Length: 247
Image (cartoon, rainbow, N blue to C red; front, side, top):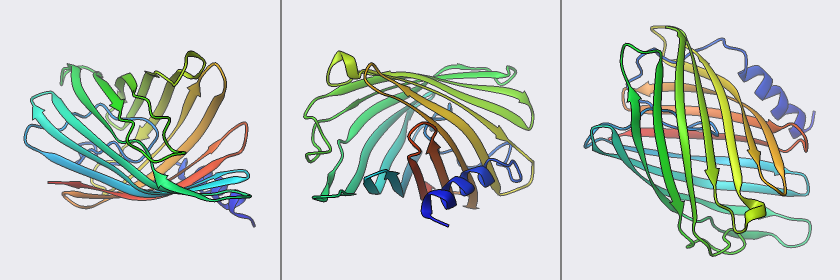
């Protein structure tokens, strides 16, 4: 069985809701997953989220080491985000490439957070900094903005969705991103599971991903994750592992 079939099998397996996160987790990172959660880090609390990923894109394969994101609570309902991103090794048919992707900074903030409501809304604004290494940068700043939403269907089912827009290097490469991620929760477990869809739409190219992942809270302040996904049209796929630390 080749790697593509094994990874697709992993995604299908992970999409079965056999495990679940705690209803009230002690740590609520944005990893894993292509979208972001609505949770805003509390004042004076810092998260470090990091991991590695393998992406198979046909003739070009990519290994990302780092995926480093620092999140720090500035005040009630607002966090600062520093994305140091990854060191990338890209294997190509002719010449391999290595380098660092652009870093970025951002703010996440609560929009609507009523404990009695089924709905929770947050906003996320960020900008990439053209400080990466070619060919993993276009030497331009790229601002983006997203609306993040949670909808609690029952105490055990929550759907998280994102809708965002990123300015590309030109108008034809502006990107609209949407994601829908159902999460199933069972009380008194340290395991978690999610599965969902993420779409990226631009004037030049569209991508549709199915993704899934498993998490485990190892300690009150440490979460481990395994995740994977497949692009439904081209068949590109990714698998990754990572950690999130709460300080």
